Length: 414
Image 1 (spheres, rainbow, N blue to C red):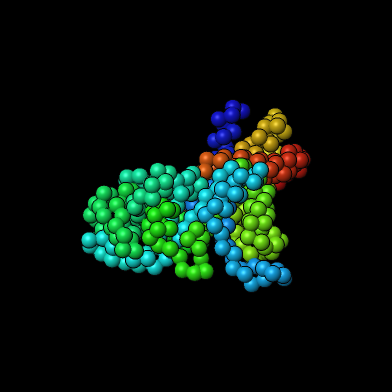
Image 2 (cartoon, rainbow, N blue to C red):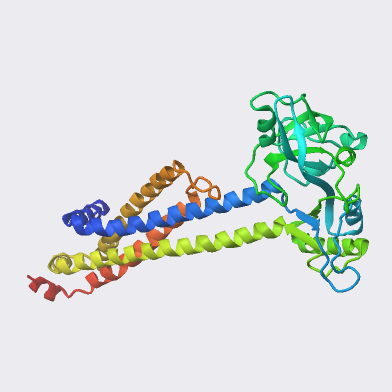
């Protein structure tokens, strides 16, 4: 018998009972679609969260002073970090590649010719963009010469620009910050982000650190050089824990608190956060994958059941074919092919449904934590390989059952 004849015969057996075949195909197709859609949702959510962390700054440690909690002379003392602490940490640590200080003050009066508002102002050093991700839509960011000269220049976040200027051009315009005149030299691009320790970047007004110290001194007990926090970058992600430990020890010696006092500093480690997100979403992917594969496995049981029923119904036919010279291999190939045809046709439908479903989901207002779901080629390849393996496994037992039929007994079947 030619392979094309075997293929045609297997197809004829499937279409003979369309309801039975259709219900079985539905189970397999549903399993395929479930695996792909759920995996796509989990992957898109993971990618979105990783992008949000990266938009704050990759492999970044944020250190802010708090209140000492250890017994002794430092108990209850507010730890005020200093602008010079960034240089001290960088020079004394072996695991830190960059460090910078940042001033922050909320409720500062910022005014344009069109609007006045109470906003959050940040004073930064020239190396700030090397640690934070600060894409500029128009103009430029604060530079080292601005800090050196104490220049009164400002960069506006996207929301600040809309608030002060609306749809008007802002770069080159003059604004007043705490009563002093500043020239707008840049506008920040909008980005997906966390609120951070102080708020979203879209709501920040950025000025040179030296200009901040002159025009926006913090109230006591802060000193003119007291900063809101330090930004620290480890030499490599694997050195993040060591960099954090060394920074705490150095700051403890400078400010006189016990480095083991966990209350003295507030620390945020984006490397650790990114790792947590990866672990969390990997667990979600595994769960969704298990649910989908379980559904797929149940569908495969349906394929096996349909093939077994077909063998039972065609015992006499199998006997006749064997009596006419059909080999065991040919009989096995016939029923394996039927099983594979059923699973692959179901899989094709399931993959198509998954693509349609993800397309429809992209049209819906999904939560901000989930990006537009997409089906990865690797997921499709995994599903197809699972279908081939599952189809072969589901058809093997019925095929072997068919070859075990005694020819004499089969010919007596009515």
